[in-house]
Length: 419
Image (cartoon, rainbow, N blue to C red; front, side, top):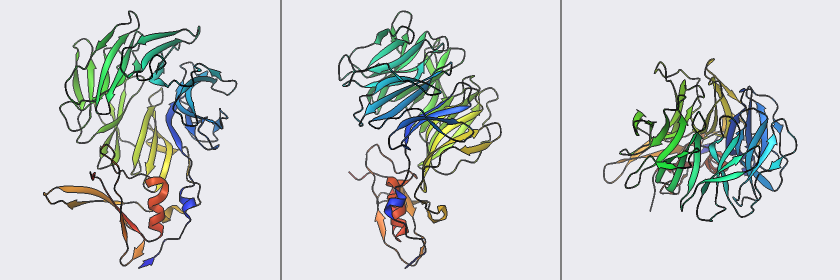
């Protein structure tokens, strides 16, 4: 066997920056805010959505920024941060242009999580959840930004997490996590404090709330009720039921709706790869999109005007980076470049999706990584964890796959669980 790939050190493959799972556009769409460990810790940064120099807003060395929410007026950024990864997230507010931060919570042994849409439409209230009342429960909390008053909006022996505000700010959808495969949606009225259970069911069914329709008639959601895979549905409040919108042959993993309600975007897990779709809800036509590299999309966010779509993308030969797709110009702009090891991109290898037969006549999908070598080569069988995990074509185990490949070793990574 002759290996034709240059031999890089393991440290070169693992010399990467990482992102926290948060990305937010400014209200005018000109900038994005995100969390990255460029400074050695996950700090808050902002950057032009067209690219350019990033600006660091926080200077943490002991805390890590996790969630981000830009205020509707564009003046402030709300975020959560924990200490040394203890997952006791606290809420903070900082001017969007930089300056003195303000701690909104200070409960070292309490977890806090922001709503999917933390700010109310008028920017006067913040929705989040916390287990300050009982460690095993999450309650929905509403904070008045001006007075600092906090109200306990929904409690009662469950993991309640606020999701999205109705357009008039009178209601909140609430996510109830019973288990990873069994969830519910409630509708919380801010006027009378009553919560209505919208998705009563039996057995293991997932319901995940999405954004509201512009007219406030209902909201989008993801569910796998009666199906093997999660699809997109639209819930009508007046009819008190939902109708299917998109039911692809694969799990819908991420869902986004533009603020004006024109565009619905989603990703489908197709054989481990993320496929992005955007539909014009007025014409019902799918948009022609810029070419998205083969990989795994980690998050979707529309710019406020609906013309841009921000996303995280990782590939088998690239670590996770932030991209912005211009839907009007059909251009994909890469904002961050997180591989720092000086490795020539041409020396990195993408896998081939293959299938092999089982004893009972089924076909098991697997990713086969072949080194750039001639003749026979050894192969590592890489079995992922489970039963919920899946082998995906991302930057495997912080570059471990690519390191083995550079040494002339192949990898076969089946998408199955050995129990």
